[in-house]
Structures are given as C-alpha cells and as structure tokens.
Amino acid sequence: MSLVRKNIRTHGDTRSFTFISEEPGRRYKENVLGFADLDRKARALACRLESRGLRDRAVLLLYPEGLEFLAAFLGCLYARVIAVPAPLPDLDAGRFGRTRRIIEDADVALILTDTAHRDTLDAWLSAAGLKGRVHCLDTQAGKDTDAGDWSPPRSGPDTVAFLQYTSGSTSEPKGVMVTHGNLLANGEEIRRRIEGSPATVGVGWVPHYHDMGLVGQFLQPLYLGCRYVFTSPITFIKRPVLWLELITRYRGTITVAPNFGYELVLRRVTDRQMEGLDLSSLTVVKNGAEPVRAATLEAMAERFAPVGFRPSMWMPCYGMAETTLLITGAPLGGGPVVRDFDAGALARNEAVPANEAVPANGTAHANGTAPPGGTPANGGVRRLVSSGRPVTLDVRVVDPETRAERPERRVGEIWVRGGSVARGYWESPAETEATFRARTSTGEGTFLRTGDLGFVADGELYVTGRIKDLIIVNGRNIHAHDIEEVARAAHPAALLGAAFAIDAAIDPDLGPGPPGDAVDASREQVVIVQEVSTRAAAGTPLEEVAAAVKTRVARTFELPAVSVVLAARGSVRRTTSGKMQRRLTREAFLTGKITELAADLEPGVAGLRTARPQVDADQS
Image (cartoon, rainbow, N blue to C red; front, side, top):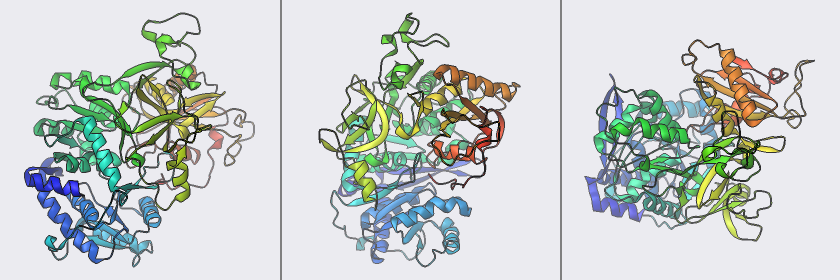
C-alpha cells in the first residue's frame, strides 16, 4: 500500500485509468479516473468501511466492469478490509449459486456494489434468506465522507489483502489468500519480466475478478505508476477490433489475454477493419491463463504483420491465483519458443524432441515432423509452446506420487516456491497443508503443488496439462486438450471442444445401458463434445463431420473407443474467466443437457445418459 501511495503522490492525475464504455448506437465513451482522484475516492470509502468495524473481515465486491470497482478495491486495502472480487451474477436465481457459496465460505457480511445493481442484489438477498445477515452498500451513494479523516492502518507483508476465488476449472472454487507481501513480490516479478516503467501503457479487456485482470491489468499500473486503458469483456466480444483500435489510439505498449481472445480477433476482425490499425507501439503481448496454441501465435503474427505486429512481441506466460499471478514468462523481445515433441514419448512421461525420435517404421522425417497419419515414434507429434522461464521463483518438476524431483525432459507435477506463493486457502487448513506445504522426497520445501503437469527442456518450462484432465487408455497418458486440438483440426466446421473419459468399471454413478447395448466396462470410453459452425460445414452433413472427427482422433491416438457429439456454440461449459470445465461438460452430457446436432457414439454410450443427480451449472 505504501508503494501505491508513493506512486500516486509522484504522478497524481498525470497517470490514470481509462475505461471505454459502449453507448447506444455503438458509440464509445472515454471515462478517465486519475490516480489522485482514485486515491481520494478510496480514502473516503476506507473511512466508511472502518466505521463499520470491518477490519480483517471479508467484503464481497460485485461490480460491472468500470472505474467504480477500482475505487472500491483500493478502499478495501486502505481500510485493511479483505476484498473479495467476484463476477456480478446474472439476473436469475440459479446464477447466484456461486455467489452464495462465496458468501458462505468467506463469512461475508457486506457486499459493495454500484447504484445500478443495489436493488437487484437486495432482492436476491431477501429471496435467499440472507437479508439481515448480509447487507449491501452502494459506494456511489450516501453522504460524502472527508477523505482527510483517513489514516493508514498498520499492515505487514503477511496481512491478507484479498481473496482470489479460483475459477474452479476442475474443482469447487476456493479462496486464495493473497497478502500484501505477495502483491509486492509478484509486482516485481512482472516488472522485471516486461521491463515495465511509468512510460508503460497497458490496454486490455480481461475482467477485474480474474487474477490476470486484477493483478496483471489493474494493480500492476499502480505498482509501476503507468497508464491503463480498458473496456469490458462483453464489449470486446461484441466487437473484437475495438481492442486493436484502443492499442492504436493510445499507443499501447503491453496487452494481455487468454489464447481464446486472440483466436476471436483472428475470426472476427475483417480486412476492412484492419485499415488504419497500427500495432507497432506494442513491445509485450502476453498469452496465458489457458493452453497457448502455436497455431494462434503464428496466425496472429502473419495476419497482423501489415499493421505492425511482430513475432518478437509474443510473451507466452504461465501463472495462477495461488502464486498471485505470474510464475514464468518468455524473456522480453525473444518471442515464443515452439518445439515439436514425440507424443508417444510424452504419453510415457518423457519429453523427446520429434527430430530425436525413432519412427515406428525406422524412417526419419525432415525437421522431426510426421507425415499425414504417420508418427515419428508412437503417437504422432505434439507441438508445444514454452511458457518461458521464472524470474526469481523456484520452479521444480516433481513426480506427483513419489515426490522425487524429475530431471530435465521428464514430465511431472509443477511445484513452485517463493515470495509470490499465497498463504493458502481461506478457512481450509487441510487443503492448504496438502497444496501449499508440500515437500520433496528429500524433505526440501515447502512448495506449492500446482496440479499442472509439465517438464523443463533447455531451461524452458512446458506445461502439458492438468493432472485431473489426464485420460488414461491402455496405460498411456493422454491430455484432454491434445485430443481437443486434433478434433478441432479434423474439419473446418469444428470449433471449441471438450474431451473427457467415461469409465463404467470405476464410476458407480454410471448405470448400465439398455439390454444388448451395454457399454464395454473393460475399457475407458473417450467422449468429445464438439461445438460446430453449421455455416462453416458448407453443406456437409453433420453426421459426416462427426465421423471425420472420430476417425481423426481414433487414428492419431490409437484409441479403441471414441464417441463424438456435435453441438452448438456455448454447449461446452466454461468458467466466468473462460476456462473450459470438462467435468461439468461431462456431467451435462450424461444428464442429457447437451442438445445434439449430430453424433457418432460407441455402442452403449448413448444409454449412459440417464437421469442422474444434477450439478449446479455454475458450480466450478
């Protein structure tokens, strides 16, 4: 907090946050909040919070994208109140499920919001039986408080600054306790990696309740004393070229987004919209929060080269809420490191570059690439993008079972330690102990267990997937997103897909199919829910598209049983931050909640979709 206030005193309103809001008629309005004005608003709110006796209590922040959230979040820090950023729920009761779980978990007694949403939240609290126990405070209304009455509370490196509830791509959301010390440590990690300064200009659209948005886009400008320009995710999705227009207009030097944001730009920005764009001011283009696709990096660099985009701008990175944000990133100006590895060796937890693999037929292929349908060894080629290198954090690759550290080019669980690693999960001592207090087989530690799998090659960290997303077939480890990549490449109509396994032999919830049509319980069944564009199918019967996806995946991974369901956009479940939820997609498939456009199913798989206990669609 002291560093933030120092930057505010140094720069005053010469540094600012600029929010671009969409107005009627597709017009855009520039809303500016200078650092000095932000500080005044935050101090005034801190006085209001202190008067309620909320020190070290969790307060839920439910705001639309915009400048009001910034003042509310900083006001919490100034009052030594634990901020809990969360997405503003949709206006139906079912979508409040995740919000209620956060309220219960964090023992929230106060919600901060804006005038536009106060009445809706009050009505929901009454309907949920929480009125009286949980109150709403409209931070835009009420009697003005003199910011001069505020005095800084005593805070140390171990004081909890906020709770970052995990997106829950594979589990129930948990509140990560991020301290003031964590924020300083990770702020310095990011500064050193991007070589940030007060001259940096950030441009983005990632939401404030996501760790990439909150830490990387909103808190980092306060750490550096630089300018930040942003719009809402909805505005970006409606018109992706706006992102590039803002970079052009404000001469942005850094931007960040998950991989799907760049893919959306590639799909939706037209040649005509590119006229007048100038991306040459960029020095850093971060790509993280989900698997980084080499094809996306290459396509962006090629498509936008005429308007100043350079491959050296790319900075693939890796991080998570449990480490505040950044763990590793590509060095500035070096561009991405992309390598081909033998997929068969990766299935055995070995990282063998494709040009070193011995093909099954004994014939080598140029540059280690496989011919169509062929393999350099056993299982094809997997192209991986390096997530870069750590700045100061200690990153290890460890066998998740034996806890023995693994050497270079051996796949294991990624473990991390250092100043950015958070204190643990809120009110969850057992999970904190298991996740944040791990020791290697030699007793070295403590480390954070990330739950991610990967390996190190030539000092570069490659993330291969999550432990819980592994599909094991005939003793081979296959990552779900590898199957999804192959499925997507099988036909131009294929969009986002989710791959998961069904094992009737070990899943007690799966009942037998109809008589004579039972699933083969002796083997794991791989199912792909594949979103498709009927327009891109260009008249091809969807049954043929499903068959093409099934054939490509079965041949590539030598899978004996693959089922494919084609569905419309939006069928694959995702978290509020855009991460795929394979578990919930699997649940939706089994409970018949996914509307099929076409399917090619293995015998008995269709019969597994019976009426089973439903999981809250927002549970993540």
